[in-house]
Length: 199
Length: 233
Image (tube, rainbow over all chains, first blue to last red; front, side, top):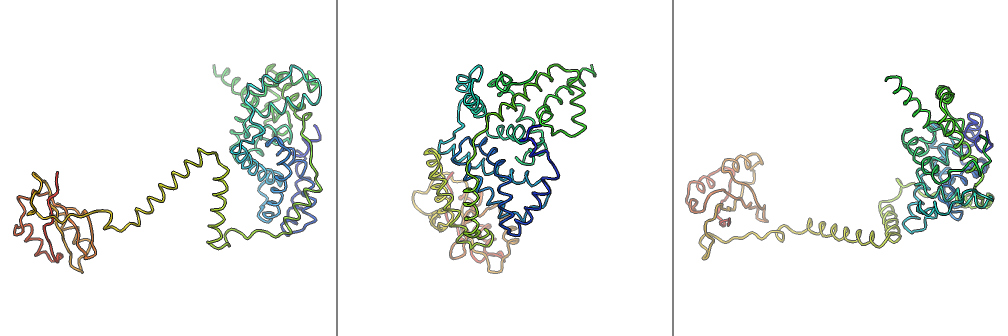
């Protein structure tokens, strides 16, 4: 399993650490907060970046999320993992920011599917082309579907955990993934060529 | 037939769980069921290969990072600036001001069509509030034209009476009286405490000395009763 997927599946050890840190953050321990911020920064950057599709807002949104963590740490009752709770906060803020971007017509991800089809190469020849193709394919997904794809493939969460993060039933998570897979299959039919997949 | 349904169900169940089988997050029982199905289904195995490749492609196209240190410093600065007063403890005036400010910001950010629609809604709301607080006397214009007024309309079907009830009259006694008469209150009470009551009686059958009027005037709950006007059809 890749290093990136370990973050969700390392289970109790990492979560115990996060929980201990969060409890200290609840007592306004700045040092604990700094450690927690550092532990979650990359994860939040990856998740929010995939949802928003623009770097200029990701940093600011991470800070908003972690400020909320600081303010509400004492409200966390341990019914879920700390990472699930924090990513749930991030998801809500990203949705709100995305709605704001759409109103201002600043949605970096508003690419019609027919444009995505036209620009995808048959085979990526460089990392730049690969990144462009994948970003365009993700742009063709509704933000709710993008979230499910990101939380599954980037963060390694189970569908039950994803349901907790995005606050919907597990079957809705599966349905969103079903539709996302259909679209990604159509837009990225030769993923195995780009990724050097083994048959 | 049942076996075919079971195969279709297990195929569907496996198919939809493949992304989470690929990322290793399925529970033991589900993972075993998926593995059992994969051993017999080429379609699902190919789909699994695709999903694993897709996952690698997505990771390979990861977005860049920004500066973690400056982000942390900025967040700590916001923490040092002090927490906002919890909403529940803010004064009503402050909460209202904050809410209106947010609403105004969102209105300014919205598309022109949305702004137009919100403006129309606001005008309608203001008109409704104005109507609700409008004095009753301005809403309706009771006509105190009597039956003897020249030019009265032909073939009226109902009569309106001005009825003033005694101070001690209860809602029950008023209701019983109106029910006996088949009447209904259409206006009032006025500043003088008079109700306009409509009776389903042709005015030709109702005079100042008629039994209905006599009965009203002698009713213990009625202080005064007067014929007002005939209601046109």
